[in-house]
Image (cartoon, rainbow, N blue to C red; front, top):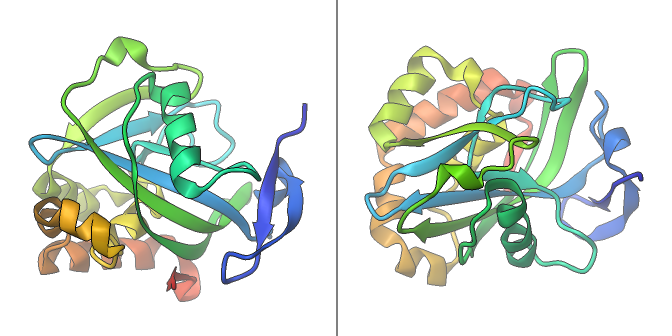
Length: 212
């Protein structure tokens, strides 16, 4: 059965729907997506390695979960639905912000999305819950570890995760108040400089921006 995603304009207003595959062709249509970032109580970010069967960025490391809202869903509800389907756990998610970006993947396809960022914190994680059709492996990473990897091996990471981290401190006031220390740890000046350099490598012509 064909899977559809929500087409949007640059302000995230819905303007229709289209088959998911068609939206991910090289000139992909702008559509709605989300990226969910889950941390543990020590402030480490849960990364997931995309399945080798994925059409785009197979085998690369991503934030915790990335997917697409359905027509009846908010960003938060879509993330809270999809997280158990991919990593087998539940987590209360909090809306951060949304951004637009368009990035090609080789000559195979592209991501052209208005992407909502969500964040949450869990106490523990059971790897046996992973849904292997979606995700190959997981790992926990600190801000400094990610900084080093983005400086030395950035091509193993998904671009949208890095954009989400770059904009993490420009977020909803309730979310910032709740996670102020965590957000600060992940958005130091040095880290944001590293994120920005990686993004400029991934995304041509500065095709990324925060959507207000």
